[in-house]
Amino acid sequence: MFENLTEKFQRVYKNLRGEGKLTEEHINLAMGEIRTALLEADVNVKVAQDFIERVRAKALGSEVMTSLSPSQQVVKTVHDEMIALLGGQAVKLRFKSQPPSVILMAGLQGSGKTTTSAKLAYWLSRNGHRPQLVSVDVYRPAAREQLKIMAQNAGMPIFEGPPGENSPYELARLARREAIMSGRDTVIVDTAGRLHIDQQLMEEMKKLREQLEPTEILFVADAMIGQDAVNSAAEFHAKLGLTGIILTKMDGDARGGAAISIRQVTGQPLKFIGLGEKFDAFEMFHPDRVAGRILGMGDVLSLVEKAEQAMDAKKARELEKRMFAADFSLEDFREQLKQVRKMGPMDQVLGMLPQVGPLQGLSKAKVDERELTKTEAIISSMTVKERNNHQIINGSRRKRIAVGSGTSVQEVNRLLKQYVQAKRMMKTFSSGFMGRKLAKMKLEEMFQGQPQ
Ligand SMILES: Nc1nc2c(ncn2[C@@H]2O[C@H](COP(=O)(O)OP(=O)(O)OP(=O)(O)O)[C@@H](O)[C@H]2O)c(=O)[nH]1
Ligand SMILES: [Mg+2]
Image (cartoon, rainbow, N blue to C red; front, side):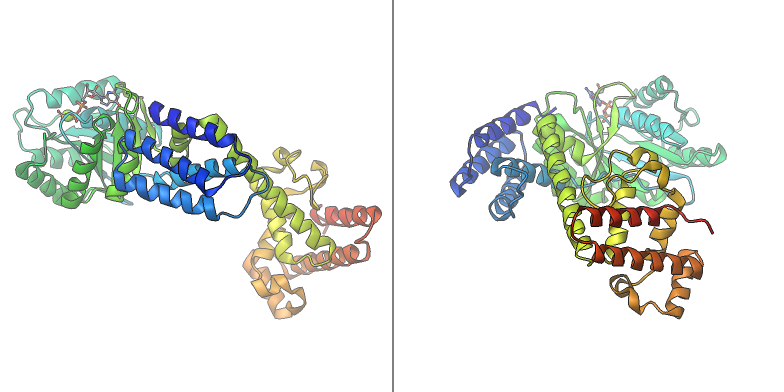
């Protein structure tokens, strides 16, 4: 997928890479190339234009990140904007608190609704759900049989309905009842395809929507047909109110532009992609991963990592500076704790501690995980004012903080005492190697968990 687009992007980077300093002219040239690449990939004109404008504005105005060269900054900006364009974060399916939830599949003829229904059932079953399939495509003779065969291949239950039943509404109603009786939490309704949006079938979809109150109406779009898929998605959305989009046939040599435009045009998130004919060729749509694929993964990701690492290091350096200027507030203390804990359980964090900063060199044996949790809870229960000026924390405030953090007043007192001691130590010894060493020892002590 997206091979052409990826190739073009790689070329733009290559051209930029040679430039030590980027002028406005360079950026304009690169933006022109990216614009052409997007349009050739079948991205909607307006979407492409907006994208370019955003990147250009950021590339010209961005604050300089010293860890990246100017051309790398442009690449990172393109990457960030591409993720944003694709929706930012992956969006999960919605479910009713009272099952069963109904998922209504919609789309043009041959877009992949039936195949995708079976895939989605299989995916749901792998992700903690108990799906139930039903086809209400009573128009094409073999349509229901097709879903039945696919369901059987994937080992998913399908509701076939009484022989001769030819009402979509009745089939849907009975399938829902069956789901309740057999304890299934999701009913996936495969509907009839249409060549173009026709009045009668649209009415049918609306009626199904009213009857079933689906939590999701997913538009299944064939990525190969490009802009047509975009237009019909917009129309479906206007008439039916879509809640998400599934792009199928992303395994083909689709130009991929539809994927990028459809979300913009409908305002609805892309939720899954189909990557083949088999029932397991299906994945959740992750904007960052897809952006990575479009832009040529390796290069860009390592670049982004590099930038992020540098940012953390910068933050840590600033913190250290404040600490040794004895300007180290409880807020800083908590920030430091948070950064460390973000990295995972303590035993895994060893070796990953920031290269600078007060936590450098803390040994695993000395860190008590529960103590960290408590410390964080106590500081979190303070107001911002209290965190920045511990001296206002009087008796009644201590009581409130203890209740808020599920600890005791004694524990709050102890933390404050340790904090004050550490702060004083740092002030006294803030110059010279030994001073820093002592200050660090003091900090280590604070993390150790003291005997009661
Ligand atoms: N390569 C590839 N083929 C797919 C994918 N999804 C569906 N197909 C194929 O596309 C064709 C049409 O799929 P269907 O699931 O029958 O489409 P439909 O929307 O149910 O079609 P109608 O019921 O006629 O409207 C079939 O040959 C599928 O195997 C996919 O992700 N990748
Ligand atoms: Mg079908």
